[in-house]
Image (tube, rainbow, N blue to C red; front, side, top):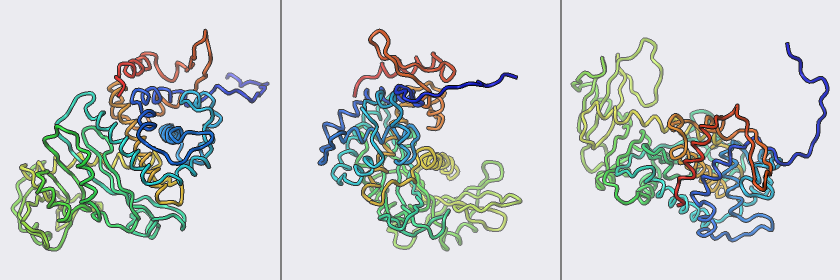
Length: 435
């Protein structure tokens, strides 16, 4: 059995090492997006640092999130990565205190301007690699549990994981086909899902690219409200939204005639005008037999030997096709879970609501950067990969930055990534036209 080294001398002071060697791929991709240029030209920052430009602080946060640094106070690990700093163009990586002060000093106008830059880039990326003419929006809310009594906006509301804990309750919108984050709204934890949803969706529509002829929406029962649904009818937007199991709806579903699909499942429909709604709407009911050991599901209603799920819709599809149309919406649950686990969505950095709102948007900006990078630069087998996989395969690579014949050379181990894969990614980045 081989033995380890018996005598080992340790030396400190090496400055050109990093275990995030693959971050150069993200950096080169962002250069093609001209991200730094857009931020410098279109975002007037009121405050200035004697050592860092505000844009450098924004990019430092974005790169740290992508690299997997889940808390600002953990960015210290990047201060000792000399190669990492040189790759992303910083003389020295900012201290956590500098990043936190920056977040707190940013005013709402700066947040809006950075959001506009984000919207501009998303509009340009929407047409790549090929243009599309339809949009499918998936809407959802999430609960971000917070720890600390002095956090602004942290209120006690519905929290399925920690009952009675303070939280934020953001609204999120993603476009299903591109998987792009579309719009967000950070809210206190005691706000109900549908509160502000009509105004939220108007902002989503404001960002729709030219040339779109069809828009459809999928949402859970939190959006079952006439104030949200009736404007969709007026604008000709198709939707399938889970209905709340009110007593009138429960009374109707037991007396319907169901036709069979998917083995022993049943589908039926009825028209009904809920209280305060202006017109009757079409409701689709999906009935499925209960398993022997039934598990509780929040969106299903159990009656005798069946469980029921009800949708309100204006789509010209058969009842069972509405279920097939809605089913892929489960992808947004996976995306939100990835945001919480891989991007640390719930790791709120400050006690200021405005600063946390800014950080929240930067985190979603980082998500889109990675999503665009996957879509345009990675081999097909990685198109649906999670951020954790992207980090493991491409970003968290031990590397040494050296100078050789007046050139900067980043040395990577061949055991971590194949030359063919690396060449493919680099070539895809080079072929991109600057935005």
